[in-house]
Structures are given as structure tokens and as C-alpha cells.
Length: 253
Figure (cartoon, one colour):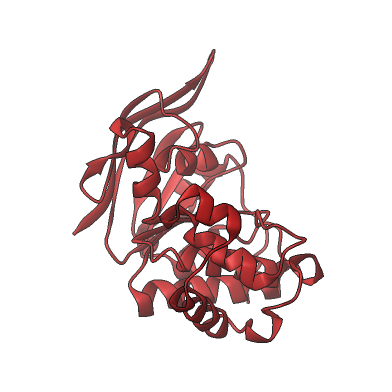
């Protein structure tokens, strides 16, 4: 079953076309990677999907609804179904790990409840369960600025998971990490995708990582899709076409 479909999607900034005629779909339970060089439009695409950026034209159908047609109230509700994981974590460093994770429930709260940090006992139990799953239970009361980069990214994953999302968008989740931490994060994402059945759309710069973890790969260059298919059919010449040059060393052993 299709959970996400982009149809004839365009994004323009004044005289620059960031995305041009983007068409693809993602099936429920898939892990799909978007690869391409810096500036290809990968981050713009993910941000258009949850309307952090407004697309210029086209359709984004998520869970049977055209996201681009939603008003503010409808969009807020729809976003509870879409988790977001960022390259630079987007955590509140002065707050504890558990507080940052519980922020993932804010979309379900009234403004007052969110400001006052009112969370139910069930939500707190869920948060600790997710932290345990990600190997972070002993860090629950640490400030986030005390954590390593890999630990911070796991907190970001936990914050997304507590939303009970149908789709998780991951914007370069390993770009700021060393190879060992990157492997840990990708292993967790794959486990979540496989064991919890959560659909993942992941921006990656590293082709080898995409080949290893993805069900399907979308290759973008200059805001256009160059390749869309299974990893086994992604040829070397197509990789060169996407990146414009030969890729560097593999980063995950």
C-alpha cells in the first residue's frame, strides 16, 4: 500500500528551480534512500513533504491526503503522523534526554499543556521504553549537551518515534557522525523500519550506505530524479551521472 506519493512536484526560489517534476511513491514499510550531491535538492524535498518549506506546485499525497491543501490546523494534525530526524539533531541542549523525547508529543497537546510540559504517565512510560530500545535508558536524566553526536541522534530518533508516526523523514542523519556512530544509527533505523513497520525516507550522501540499507533508492541531481529503483540495479555509470564524479571511500564496514 502506498503511504506517500509525490506528483509533478516543483519548488522554485526566485530564479532557481530547486525541484523539477519530482514523481515517486513510497510503500508502507519501506526504507527508501534519496541520494545525491550537496545542493541536489534532497533536503528541500523532505522539507516540502512536511511543509517546513512550501512547494511551488504539484501534489504530495500522504496517508491519502494532499498535504499541500491542508490549513494550519489540519497540517498540525497531519504532522503528528510524520516524524523528522535532522542532521544536527535539533535538540534543546539545556534540557534532559527524557524532556527532549517527550517534546515529540507536543503535536498532540494544547498550547497550554505544551508550555507547562504536561505529559501523561502513559507517555512517560512510552518514552522510557523507547529510550531502552535505543540503549539510552541510563542517560534519561542527562542534559543533551553532555551526550556524544551518536547519542544525540538516538535521542532525535526517540523523539520521532514517540509520535507514533506512519512515516519518518531522516535528513542526512549520519552526515555529522563518525563511521562507527553512523553504522549504529543506520542499524537502529533499519531495525525500527523492519521490526516496527515504520516507513522511512532517508536522505544520504553516501552511496554505499544506501545500497546496504535501502529497499529502494532515488537518485537526485540538480533537482531532478536521475534514478528510481532497487539497489541491485543501480549501475556505476548512473552513480557517476548523479554525482558528476566518482564517489569516495565507503564509510561503513
